Length: 345
Image (tube, rainbow, N blue to C red; front, side):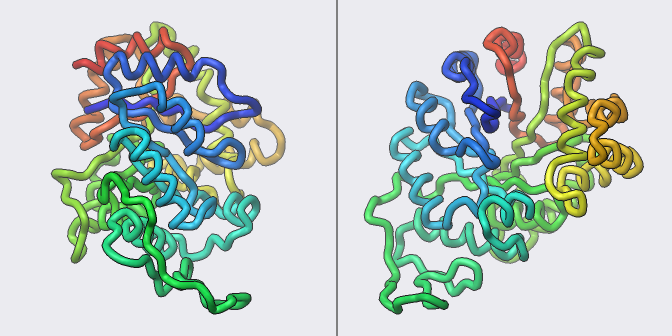
């Protein structure tokens, strides 16, 4: 099982120590460095900037939001990054949620599965460069001949020859239908809030996708990259308390109250009543109480926290569950260096 450094997206300002973190990750032996976006910083620009100082690690997006760019624009960015990095790009895509898609990008959220399938097909057409890129739609018709069209559009193929036609495409997916689609059309699954306890359930979803006609991959060559906090510490209590406000935000306050995909993940884990309580408290402004309502076991289901021996033991559990890469966050080079013996296991 490999490790990737998850840099995420920026808060109010750019983080100050990322160049040092990226350099340490490459030196230690991390497999990749990943960036994200929400409704502030974008994913591609920091990845290219910080990635320019690397020579070995893969450079991935985890994730690029579909509604932020047309499929052809995303393919252009991916093929450009792949050339500049000498073939190290990984394109991670995700649909996000209705609050962001409709509120920030001004795009309809409906039919996310259909949109994802159509989007990925167009990206692959660009990267393959076997002919002019076309799509019947209905979400991304190429050429466009709808309302307001001049009728002058024509099919094109990329001027720049992609370095690789098979740049890995990983999909961020949380629900059963999305995960099955990921196994069918993608090269890897970006799993957020993954728990080894439910590996059997995830396997059923994945196997449904692998069994579909024309599935791109099989279990043998499919990657599962799970986001996971890995913390070596003798103060597990302190780490759990530090994480609870963040968990309360994602469970109780992220996205629309009527449709929060992160909350749904924890409902599937059996935390339905807890999710309801956290949401009620968070949405009524009682954020401290919402954090206090997060049980320790909810965090430990999706994170690895403990002394070195405990962490080593849990890493084996995650690997046995089928995870091929852990995407971990770190606040300091020292924290990364603590992980070095685990990365090199």
